[in-house]
Amino acid sequence: MKKPGPSASSRRNDVIDLKDGLAALVKTYRLQGKLNEVTVVASWERVMGKPVALKTKEVYVHQGKLFVRLTSAPLKHELMMAKTKVLELINTEVGEAVVKEVVFL
Image (cartoon, rainbow, N blue to C red; front, side, top):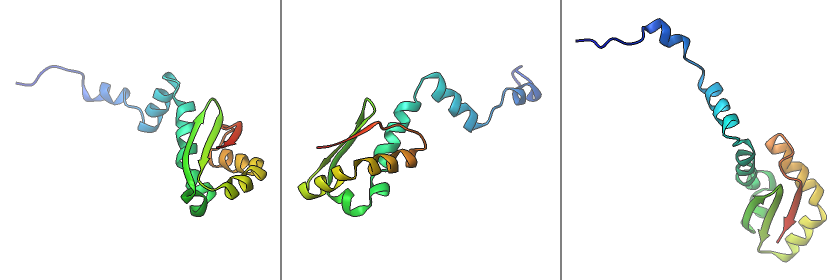
């Protein structure tokens, strides 16, 4: 026996696109900032290239600062000299100004 329930036409009225649903979820739970931080960390190798990524020990974002721990002192010095360029490349990759400062450790 069939259970009574909402008709097919009323269910279609409640349907929203997956993209819109996920966007609403992210907005409701205020997750956009954290998602942007994860995007920054995930895109480090793509933005800086394989040679820099191989010399990178750790990358994380905390309170708008990107912390990068490197295993090479000469590379650290070189990147410190190009700090504003690195900042620009990272923020361009994400699409908004997520990182306010880059700290090389």
